[in-house]
Structure formats: structure tokens, C-alpha cells
Length: 120
Image 1 (cartoon, rainbow, N blue to C red):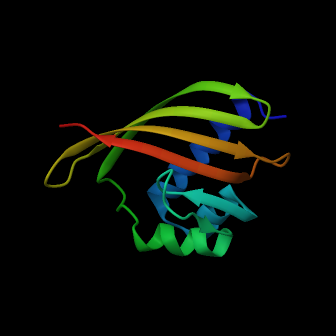
Image 2: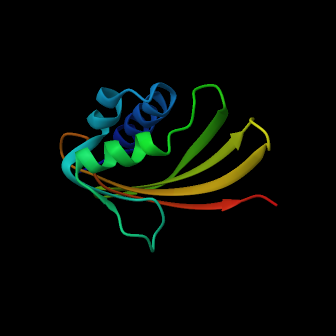
């Protein structure tokens, strides 16, 4: 069963990986056969190796963004996180995010879905 501390720890690990783009940091977040949906209606990246490749293909450079979050809900192995991402690079832009995570018993994500909207 996942709790608020497990979700918070996972999100902090995600932020660390986002800052470092280190394959070990990224890989540590996801189970071997995890699914990563970059949008709810897109085909997911399937498996840790594909998640790593997809992440690095569209990585953000450290220092170009800021991210704040709140954990909205935790139920069984599911966590729902609300985030706000502000990109500082030209053109500056802000996104509202909802992340839905499903963690396994060891704290690895087995399914991740992100929903995002750009602020106009």
C-alpha cells in the first residue's frame, strides 16, 4: 500500500532525475515493465529502457525550469499530484500538471500518466 510519504519520496526522486538527467536517477524511479504516458491518449513508453530513452530524447536542461507540487490524493497504490511548471527559457511559459502515479511495494512507479495544460 502506498502512502503520502512514498508518493512524496517518489516525486522528489523525479525532480532529482529531472535536474540531473542521469540515467541511474531516471531508471531508479520506474519498475522494469513500467508504462509512462506522456499524455493520456498517447501510446506509453513501455519498460524502463524505453522510458529512459524517451526521457533523454526530450529532456529539459537543469536550471531552465521550476516546479512546485502538492499531493492531492493517495488511495491504495495510486497517487495524484498537482504541479506547476514554469520554464524560464525564451519563450517563458507555465504549465499546470496533474500526475497520476501507481507505485509498487518497493516504491517504483509501474504506471505514470501526465496531464498538462499550458497557461495562456
